[in-house]
Image (cartoon, rainbow, N blue to C red; front, side):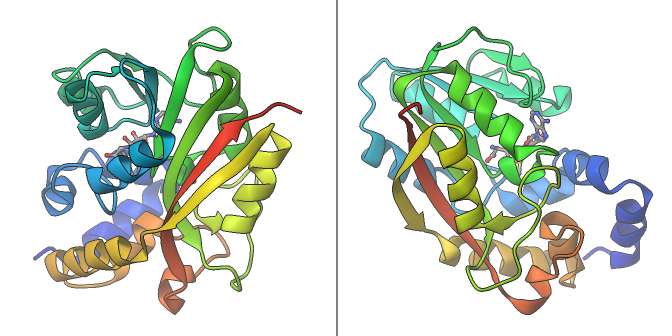
Length: 241
Ligand SMILES: C[S@@+](CC[C@H](N)C(=O)[O-])C[C@H]1O[C@@H](n2cnc3c(N)ncnc32)[C@H](O)[C@@H]1O
């Protein structure tokens, strides 16, 4: 078990880069297991069931981390590619398929390149989530699907600035952003149970709920203190305006 003061200091030093680099830490990755998100590839499989991409569709995973989804998609015969900002995580992901180091606010592909874009538990880390959604829309073909799985603040809870702040927002906030970027939501699936299971594992390992605040809180949002976070899969189709 780890002393939480260590994490508090780490967090105070540099909040945004702390959250991003925290996923590189071996200790955290041990608790997560494979994928660095609640639900693992079960959530990805649920997305594939809904999207029914033909093999071999061209799929991109933005914020691919250690490449669990990349591995999963390649094994299923898709032409998949991963992008992440962390060269450390990409080193691991590269054993499963092609990867690119980059920032999901500015994707290094031409317009209408992919049939599907996955953004699994990474949109909540964006400094400008509207820019990320808009970039995903740009690189998607017409009627392509954007798969977002993420931590959300439950409906009734205080909403957050949708664009220029990282951290969880409500599903209705995401829905507004998606519509504004030319997407139509085609499915929403609740995975709150997976979030609770991961939270329990994290608390068990670190001996305190502080780690949850480090990972999932943001300015002005004490959602994980009040238990009002959830995890959902949202699938949206690029319909244009
Ligand atoms: C919670 S992890 C999820 C990783 C992976 N999607 C998974 O589910 O295993 C968030 C990932 O987003 C990446 N990330 C954060 N900010 C990013 C950015 N601006 N551009 C690209 N990747 C970013 C992090 O490096 C990290 O790998």
